[in-house]
Amino acid sequence: MAPRDNKKKQADNRSAKAYDPLRDAADGDDGASHGVMMVLREWSDALIFAFVLAMFIRTFVVELFKIPSGSMSPTLLGDFIAEGVATDENRQSGMYLIIRDRHSDTVQTWLKDNKGVYEYEGRKPLVALTSSQRELLNRNIHLEEHRIFVNKFAYWFTKPDRGDISVFRVPFDKEPRDYARNGHVFQVKPYNRNQGVYVKRVAGLDGEQLDINDDGRLAVNGKEVEAPPIFTQLRYNTTELTPNQYSVTVPDGGVIMLGDNSDNSEDSRYWGGVPYENLRGKAFFRYWPVGKWSFLNP
Image 1 (cartoon, one colour):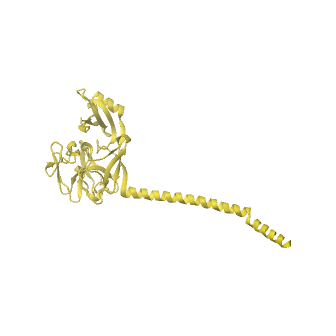
Image 2 (spheres, rainbow, N blue to C red):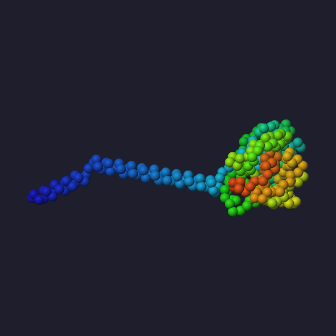
Image 3 (cartoon, rainbow, N blue to C red):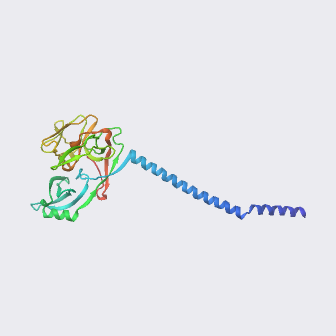
């Protein structure tokens, strides 16, 4: 019987050794800690990957831009505006876009035609609006700054096309200089390609002869531009620097960029061509305001 008792004691000892509450608790804690660390590591890996992917997309693929001014109106808005129905001096009703100048008591007005295209009526003093237009402005005025998607690799392998809405850094200039607009003279500080980013439309391609005709139409090599169709709608101004005409040969390796709102745009009419290397990308989609989602086709 003794051998059986010894075997039973040995079995009981093994059982006691197998069951150690402190050791089991420690083992359980290590497992829980290990599980928490695994979860944290998975989340940190995911966040780092998402950040790197976002930086890659922003740098090389798509970037978001906000329109900061009214230089591309009415295509892209970045100003205090009112939009709605009003009547003119002859009590004719129409759909108006009115932009309130930020620095003077003037407004710019556009009237939508029967094709749904806004035609520019010009700049006028605030007091020159009809009572209906002033009511529209007072009732609906708000800051509207459109936001766009920009294709960052659009010009990696191809040159821009006429009519592209492009984002670019302004040309570099070493010395300050003066320019005049709307009867006022301004001093322009040297442009820095590490600061200013503009949004304009490609109007002239390298080597072309570009002119603004007496009726405001854009002409290339002596022929008025018909394509893309947006150029049949736009009208351009000469400047105080070129009061009678605008005529320029587009420099090799660059483009001429003009704002759609020629009456309120600092563009190539003032500082010349933009080198290809200054182009940041091509705007292709407006995502804000939500009610104005659209592709930006020329």
